[in-house]
Length: 244
Image (cartoon, rainbow, N blue to C red; front, side, top):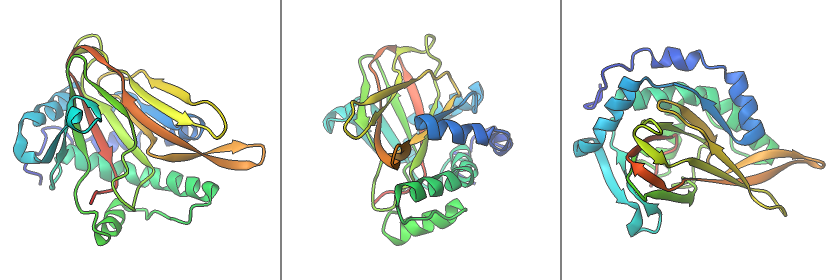
């Protein structure tokens, strides 16, 4: 059990199993993102948020302004992960791996992802990607996150999850999650996800296939967070590949 075990992750796997994964797949195919409303309870959101001020559970802290990433900060969890974060990773990966494999087939990418997340992590670790990538992000007034991609190495799982831990209009204002899609020879398309506390958003990390008149083509995606105007905004990021 993780040293940062949370109080109530026991039924999270059941909640994940009850998600309409057919609808999730359709939304991912159509827009490159899919919303899972209320995946975490307010209590779970508060528990995860409270971990931010317990540095023993993290391997590193990043102040965004020092690297040109935006403003705000985030911390990467250390292994072993908190139980809730581990459950999110392990229980959602098998639902997403078939989608990732189908996408790669449509894009002509000769990479297949195993059905079990532990087997995928073994692939990452064999290549030297051994550092855990799930993270907690904290934003205050005037903070934001520039558009980016969470790649971290050769082995990249093409989908990831962000869970909003704070409640808009109560804990903060502004701070919208933004996803942009760069289409070949066209202007970028923007998607703004209207997240509430506990909502999880699954979205493409790097590329996704789109159907065109001559078959499927690739579009590149980036994500970020707009300026927080007031209050404090916390987010849990669940990335399935590990980092160098």
